[in-house]
Structures are given as structure tokens and as C-alpha cells.
Length: 325
Image (cartoon, rainbow, N blue to C red; front, top):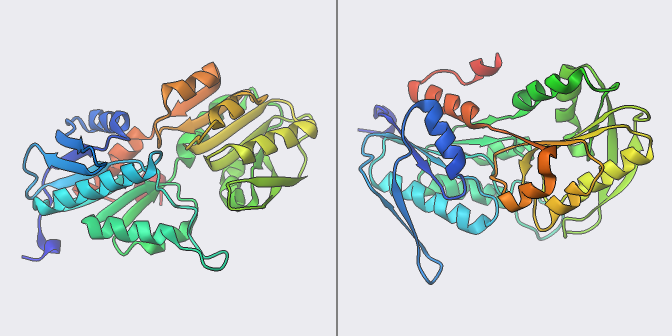
């Protein structure tokens, strides 16, 4: 019997160590339990995965974000995928809320890799039949996968929350921290019925540093909503907040999907004159970093969104219908 002729069985949910809290919330939405499995770290840094029950003929989902430590989390996911495949799972889906190396999506200078393509190949070779991820840095990364998948967005989730604040805002304006996010930012502006402004920046090295150049648009005496797909070291957001404040902005809100928050990014952001930070749990933020923000951060959960997508995938129903697509 060919693989595509197999009937998919019950949902089996596996939580990677980077996404245990998120996986538990997804399980609650689905009214199932997270399957138990062993993840053993050997002294030589090798990983060992062992399932505690058979998955033969079942529909398996591995929930694992690939934030810091990136390579450990990535390898754990790959080994788990292969373990499920070797145990004769009917279908294996990699659910990767945050996909590492997504910025390495093209050769933008000589003698450099396209690592996002490599990661896509690794997920497929490890045994995944499908993938699910959130808000890719660049849309073309979907083309790196030969397997089908669902690329979801937190746009609707974030937009619904911002709408609850909309009535208290003073002539809000959407501002992008860089021009690369401008197209997606237009969706926010359209739904909120606001104008837009842009911070133009220029990448000056390969060291995650960027130089903010100028502000295009009007923010004076207006509340500003700065939007971006992810915050890594926080440099772009720091420049954007400083620039809109210099140009007379009133309250500033910072919105981003993936809270990577490398190095001292949490401290840098918390020191900014920002009224509220709005993000999601695609990456679990350590309590030590959350503490810097106090009550100025709102973390929206993607658990119900992923849970519904998993349910629809298992039942063979459309995911696009969730978004009227």
C-alpha cells in the first residue's frame, strides 16, 4: 500500500522541549493529552528520543519552535520526526511556530548560503509529510518545501486585540520598522482604517545591526503602532521608537509576532518609552525576560489557532475557510 493510500488515524500530539506550554494549550483545545516520550541529553551533547507508545497508523504532530538554543531545538524536532516515521506513523506533521534561519532566504551577497532552503530539506528528509508554521519572514520560503503545508498568520489575532484598544487611541498611525514589512503592514492599516508611515533603514553589516535613516510619513501628535514580524536584538525597534518620538509621536505601541529577544533585547525594549508591547507565544518568553516588561507586555496565544488547524487537517477540512479564503 502506498503512503498516500493510508487512512490517517487519531491525532497524536508531541511536545518539543521548546514548546511544552504551547503544546499543552493546544491539547486542551483539542481535548486530548500530549503523548509522552523521552528526550535524553547524553554527556556528549547527542540527543536520544524514545516514544512511550506506538503511533502505527496514527496522525502525528510535533510541536516545536526553533528559537534559542536554535540547533538543539532543530535537531530535537528532526530526530522526533524521524522516530515517528520509523514507528510507522500514517502521517507526520512538523508544527513549527517559529522557523529558524528564515532570514537566510536568498543569496544577497557573494559566497553565502540559503540556509532556509537547507532547513526545509532537513524537515522533509527527517520524515515530515506536512508542515505548519507562522508568519514567515519571506513568502518565498514556502517554495523551499516540496511537501504541502500551512503558513498561518497571527495578523487576525493581533488585529482583533488592537481593535479593543482602537477607541482609546489618538489618530493612530501604523509604522513599519523597515520597508520589508510594508506590504503586511498595509493589512493592519486597512483593517484599522489608519494611515501609514515608514522607517527607512539600511543594513550595514552581517552582525544583526541596522542603521535607521529617515521617517517617511506623518506621526506628529498621533499615537503610533510600530509593527514587525519578529524582534531579535531589538535594534530596529529601538531606532523606530526613537525616531517617531523625535517626530512628535504621542503613545507608542510595539507589535511583533515572534519574540526572539536575543541577548539583552528585553532590557533594551523595556527601557523605551512604549505604552504597550504586543506579541504572541510562537516562542516561549522566559520569565526573567518577561519581568523586564512588567505589565506593559501582552502575549497573545496562538494555541487555539494551531489547534483548529490540526483538527481540520486531521478531518480533511479546509483551513482557508477559517479566514474566509
